[in-house]
Image (cartoon, rainbow, N blue to C red; front, top):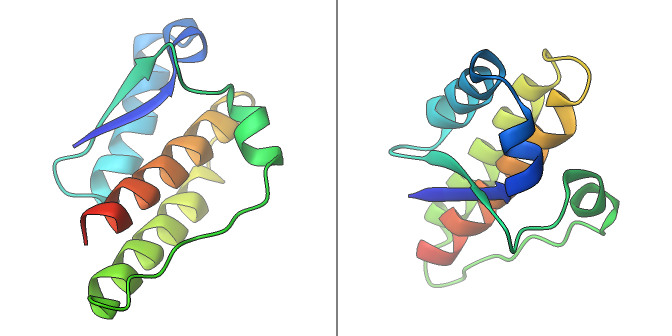
Length: 103
């Protein structure tokens, strides 16, 4: 699954930094690939928005698993530094939202 983050921010990172974020997201979401997208909001704008996670009552276990994976990825992002943190957290939120939409 493609996890979309702001293209300008993603391209602004060097290969090593992109690999760190990809490693965190990929460790928590199976087959997730982080990619830049011109329609995605900048990370700081994403983080400034209130977090309202949806819950799928038809599949509560899948929805819960997505939330747990998202929270674990956000926690792992905290081990990074500088501008990597908000970009990584924005990617974790995007992955959680996409996961919940598919559960």
